[in-house]
Length: 100
Image (cartoon, rainbow, N blue to C red; front, top):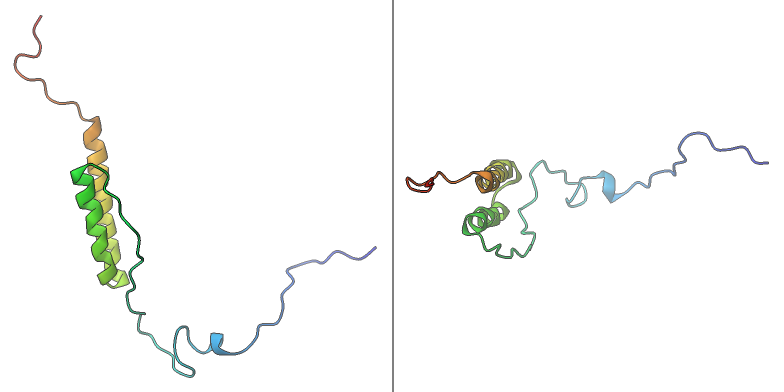
């Protein structure tokens, strides 16, 4: 009966372009971030103008560097959360709603 293999089995890594620099020409290492590329996600209207306005703000993220995404995502998340919270709020009674 063969002995079980203990520990991970790995194959030797090939040397080549993968070790030189991610996304750069051979021999050139770069600390610069890659250019922004739009994701091409199609946004469909929800039918709620306030929600659609928040989601439309996400379209501007494609033009921002990665370190600018967080601020937009947090703002959109905060706005969407506020919209959901407003659905739970009960409207204030009007002066004559409590008639007997």
